[in-house]
Amino acid sequence: MGTKNNRSFFRINAMVQCGYRVLTTEEALNKKYPSAIDANYIEEYFLEDFNQLDQQIKAIVIEIGQKSHLLAKALSNLNSKINFMAQTVDVKQLSNILPTKMVNLSAGGIQLKIEGKIDLTNKVEILLQLSTDEPPIITLCDIVNLSKKQDGSTLTSLKYGSISEDDRRKLIYFVQNKEIEFAYKNKNDS
Image (cartoon, rainbow, N blue to C red):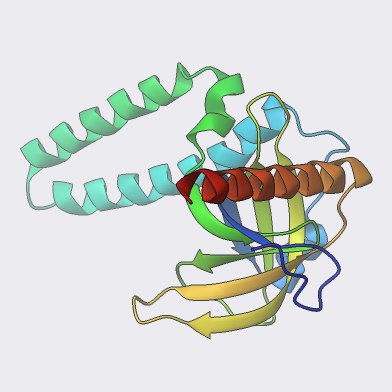
C-alpha cells in the first residue's frame, strides 16, 4: 500500500462501486460524453444494458413459446413485471446499484477483473461511484496490460483517457483517505 511503483500516482486496493463496458476502437471513437454526468446520463448508461438484455429475453421467450405456450406466457409476464419495477426506480439512485468490486485504483488508472472477451485493441469505459455525495466519474480507458485468470476473467490494467482535473482530484482524495484509513487500522490492530 502507498508505494509509488514507478508510477505517477499512488495506488491502493479498495472496494468501490464500479461499472465497465468493453468497447471496440470504433465504438469508442463514436462515443460522446457530456461535460457533466447527471442522472439522465446514468439512466441511459443502465438502460442501454437493460434494453439489450430485454431484447435477448424476448428472443428466448419466443423460442420457448414454440415448445410451451404456457411457459412462454409466464416468462413474458415475469419480464413485464421486472420492466415495470425497473421503471419505478428513482433515477438518482441508479448509480447506487453499481456493483462493488475490488480494484487497484490511482489517479492515473485502474486495475480490475473483466469478464468476457477482451484484447489490447479494445477500450474500456469505466463508471466509478466513489461517494454518494458526488456525481460518478466516467472515463474511457486504454488497456495497458491483460492477464488471464484461472476463473476465466482477465485482470485488466487500464490508463484513464481524458479525465477532468476535478475527477482526478476526487480520485487522489479517495486514495489518500483510504491510505489514512489503512494506516489508522494497522496502528489500532498493533
